[in-house]
Figure 1 (tube, one colour):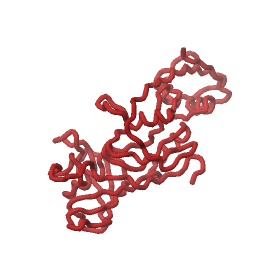
Figure 2 (figure 1 turned 135 degrees about the vertical axis):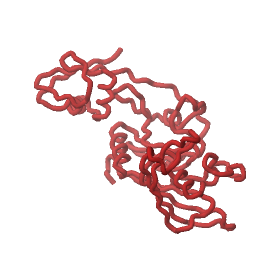
Figure 3 (figure 1 turned 180 degrees about the vertical axis):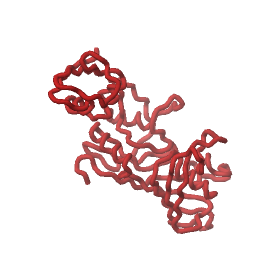
Figure 4 (figure 1 turned 90 degrees about the vertical axis):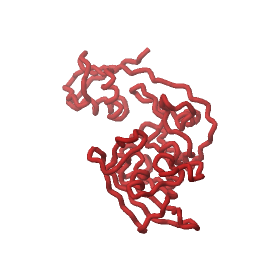
Length: 282
């Protein structure tokens, strides 16, 4: 049975601000409640979070039951780099998908988090698992996971304002010509291959990537590079490399002749993540 609560407004203010204070949740979660038609003001359903409440108006909230889905059996392990009461920093293995989807039949990182007991039940009834950002299935490396709703909201805001970020390393072929290369080019879905993204498209979104040479292979055919994203577009590193006629070793989507390479995975790794801690602010 759904829980129903009534609140009385003691001074004029926005509906989402009022409920966020009364319930102790974030405004974005309140917005989800309103979107799901779970909030009434003086008996009328409210269409938007920004409604201005008047003195002594009654707000009724009907809380949806949290949806809990059983975790699949997990046959992989995930290295924990750091953990406290608020965040979990992990090293995601290559070959592990982050989120479940109808097309994904195997266990995902979300299933691993469920087994670990990280399940953020939100007031909107949608069960989250602390995932703030994602990595492609083949990409390995650092990810930060929020262990409570407050931390999730704080980290999500950093993702939006770019105060959170990552540095990647990759092995590419052929080597880059310059020590530092910056690519600025819009990225959007390819019209020729729906699995790929393409850059230089008028309908695409702005994207910027910096590449730095690190080391050459003995035969000078491959090169270890560092990559810094200034935006977060799908396949951004891979697409910007393709625009320079380069590709990451093991990339079976963007490489010209992937079968000629013997790499068992794409050689792309998120090796540094930086963010401000939700509690210590360090």
